[in-house]
Length: 276
Image (cartoon, rainbow, N blue to C red; front, side):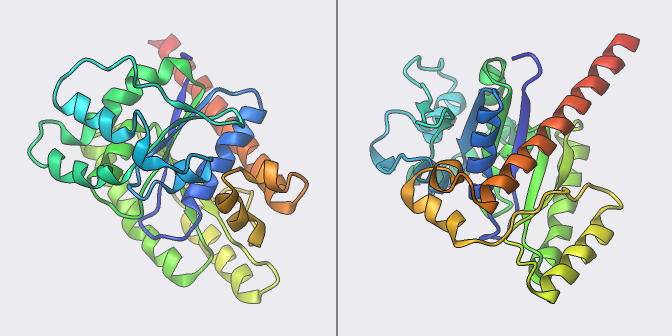
């Protein structure tokens, strides 16, 4: 698709809902009629397993294979096909061998842009490409940010989660200045929010006031629920596990926000190109 949107979903803090968000946002967009590819850049392969592919050590093609092919300057193997998830998502899976990729990239030219080479080769097939990042700011995450058009940052309404956002926002700013000038932050997604507690409500409001100055905090927040954790164990999205629950409703609303932002960005881009 000409107007494919590539989104990196990242936060260097673990346990904030990155993988859950990637999987459920992807399925919600598919349900809206979009063609979606998700890319798992975490050697633990949590996203891959969350979408129903358990035997990650015996897959014909993984992101490791793709990285090695590009670094060694081979032609893309036609067998490097994505997996087809039963809920309609295409998946470029991860495996444990992805751990060695960061070491392999150390001495490579343009090492931050290897993933971008792959993304650019497939983006005309999709409306959205979602990249699930590992909980670190290492080379794989840098590759995701260089390949992306924008970033979504899941974050819990907790003090330490909020504090860690400053470092991430600064890192994104450096990558924008030096490597990917078109990179944007679409917004911060509040996850695992328990509005029954005063503390969660207060931190949520604090984060909206603090970060609204330079990026959006999404109107939609994802409530805390055991249902979200159960989906990963079953290898399905929340829409199959609990389609009428509050988590499914929240991710549907979130997907509409994401799609609305993408459409507005495309309109602005087209207007700017027409002026040129």
